[in-house]
Length: 129
Image 1 (spheres, rainbow, N blue to C red):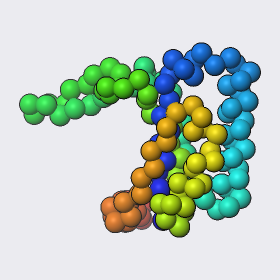
Image 2: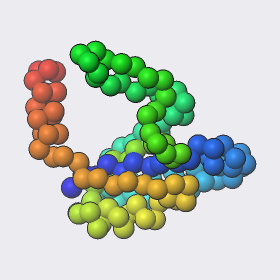
Image 3: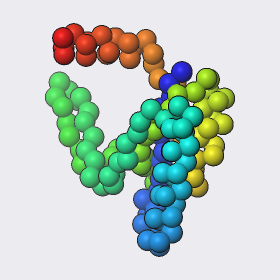
Image 4: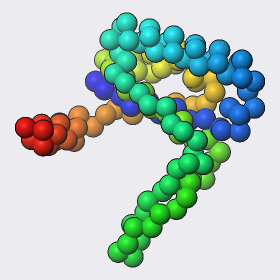
């Protein structure tokens, strides 16, 4: 099964981490990602720039409205995603509970929607075909 693991971080907390400690934590995360790769669990991932650089789109009154920044009532913002292959949710939890990134903020783990993703893959193949 595929899982999307979304790592959240309080940006002000990350910005207060001394550079050397931040680099050490990033290296720990990269090293653990390598462990996931060796086990065939790491499918990909993306780190995200600051939420201050985000925009939010919303369809309102027949128009798309663009708002600067994220639209969230929380200090913790999405910092990145990791795509994971695991047997089931408990296995995904076990794998991600060892990820050093959990020290900086929570991870939300959700199963990928295999049915919808199969439709997307079909359309991709037809488009490239």
